[in-house]
Amino acid sequence: MEKISRYLETLLNIFMAVALGLMVILVFGNVVLRYLFNSGITWSEEMSRYLFIWLTFLGAIGAFKAKEHLGVDMLVRRLPVKAKKVVLVFSDLLMLFVLFLVLEGSWKMTIINMDSKAPATGLPLSFVYGTGIVVSLAMGLILINNVYKILFNKVRDEDLIVISESEELVDFKEISVRKEEKQA
Image (cartoon, rainbow, N blue to C red; front, top):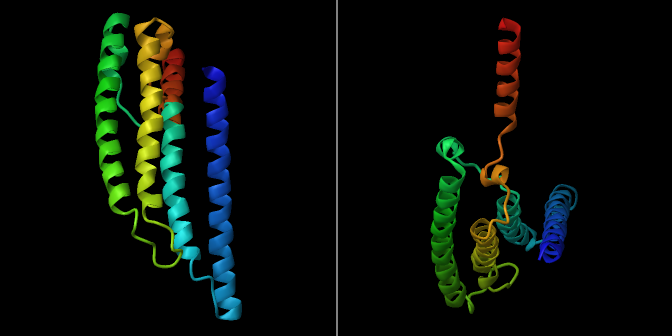
């Protein structure tokens, strides 16, 4: 399972890098063409926008897997281990419900826009609305895996805190510790 997860994560990172590279090339090329040759690529702005949408949503999957989304865990940090597990399973199930709603809405929008075409590229607009389907399925699988690990004790106690601390908070803690050491 971990091998598949690493493979998919690598594939996700490659796709995001390619999308970012294509965006840069399209936008930069279009700017050069406009200013130097008084022309441009008509579909580059639209394609860059669609790539940006995909890049943003796929980046959200990567950040979700790495537990780098913002969150507040002041209460959870103070709970005993069993209570942390209950709270995390509850929150994961709640997020699964929200992702189901996103999946349902994205599916409907994708089906509705299957025949609609983007004006410049001619791509079906379902290409844009399909991002919600991909994101909700990917994040749902990550959540199901997390719930499985929690329920079957395949997670360490220190991994029950699912929020990464920000750099500013870490720096603040280090400064506080140094001040306390100086005072002692």
